[in-house]
Image (cartoon, rainbow, N blue to C red; front, side, top):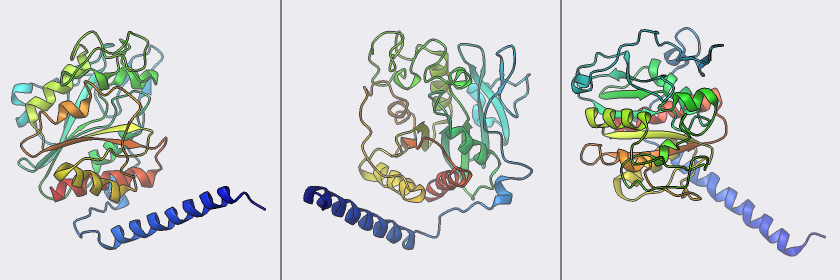
Length: 297
């Protein structure tokens, strides 16, 4: 015979599972008609978008689809950048380009999407790849950064080439954290890293309405209140992510805190914690969620 306490726990867990299933079903039934659905042809015009950096023997890195003579953006006139064009907004410590591509229509809801900030958490790059080629709804202006940490992504490490956690290096609410070698090392000072400065300049130049940052692999979205919380909850419902507090670290100088200082009035910026891996269907589901919450803003 099973231990009564154990049986009680099993019953409670099963009941919780039933409640969660009913809640998800209710969300699906009440989902507004504005939800965006991408057809396979819309995201796979010839073949699936590239999903990783190409590694060359000399350790240099090229980003798929980016020419070696990539044009550098004039940040003062960035709002004049032609659509469906990718330009560099800066370079990493190891001289790799940090790029942005603009898609959609001028004057639409302006969304900045960053696929990678921690180099070994790069599933978000696949979502950006889909957004690069997907059919977009009306009234959307996307600014897509595949990776703000190309060095970390190339070496498959959390930090940039200086050993700095870029998600603790932004000027907003920056504070010193530990020494080089520590997983949350915040750098020598606020925005001390070229990657952080590039992203800061981009945000100040375009003043987005929404900023989304992809991480792994806590599989959650941190809760919030008001309109911010509603948008987060909507994204969570569309993707199946739970809304649970993110904890376990020192959260000073983070990208999401900074992004809320550059969004237009009433704008939102938040982090999306993906799971350890993404299937192709999950990648498309997240891309659809980005377009849906943008269309609904």
